[in-house]
Image (tube, rainbow, N blue to C red; front, side, top):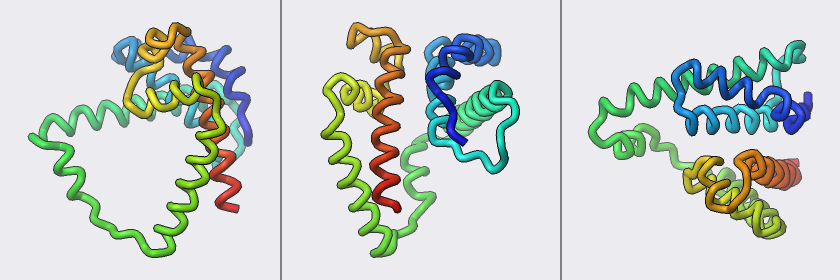
Length: 166
């Protein structure tokens, strides 16, 4: 099922942000969780048809909020959480997986090179951990515009990956 993410974002974004704030998220965290929710919708393939899209959006946001709270609750218990996480999984990829990964990476790089400068800057800033509010301030655009750029980049990259995986 394909969602019109931009339309859903316009209709439910602010309400979703208020919902996340009521659950205890800071303004920036609520904005990030809201954006992450809509990015998940973009790539979602629900097992069954979604009858109530609004409920689906809020459930997704609630689950992301719970996951974040769990991570924040567990990580402070470990002195060097990055070191511990790096040791948890030690699965060497198969040669086939390495080859496929290289093909996917090459396709993503080629697709990223096709993207105009501003949307690419938003994408790279987001990869660096910046919030959409920070990106918007740095680029002189609204957080929604930064999100829109990110959405377009993600759709372009997903299409490139889908072509490689076919």
